View 1 (cartoon, rainbow, N blue to C red):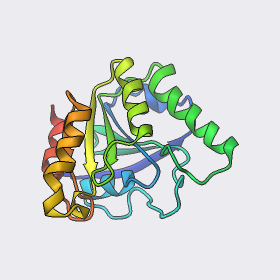
View 2: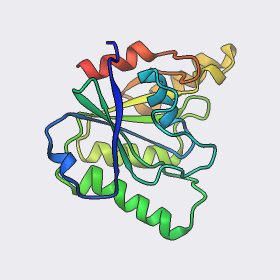
View 3: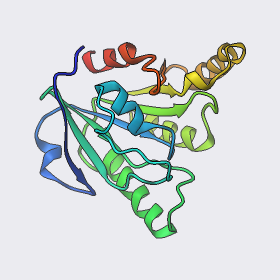
View 4: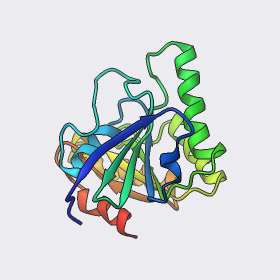
Length: 189
């Protein structure tokens, strides 16, 4: 699949008519600073489309990007160790829960971005189990595989596979575009 066009449409914090326009949504979720925005940028080949930051908790709204005029990539705020005031963290958690579990919005797929070196954390498992309980179609993108030593790669990936079974796992590197074609296949199926 080739990206002909990728455009930021808008950021929302709750109910919005954009969610009712019938365009399929592929939602990206993951811990703060796991590289969600970097994965989106590498996937579409536009370095500045989704804003990245070294500051945890930078994304504070639901950002929608229209790809090839046919589907949205939805970048959700991160969870976990965001260095934000409690009130802001609570608001973000409520927004994410609303989008996935309390609204009538249907996501075609949810791409759970994890750090391949770290593996699935307690926070990753909590969101994964919640998504499973609600019957969501989840694919796990193990980002930052380029940071794993060759001697550790098989062991780390096998551990992720064992814990995340039966979900599909895509080894990925936003920095080196590894796994890009495999991830693109998820938007075609």
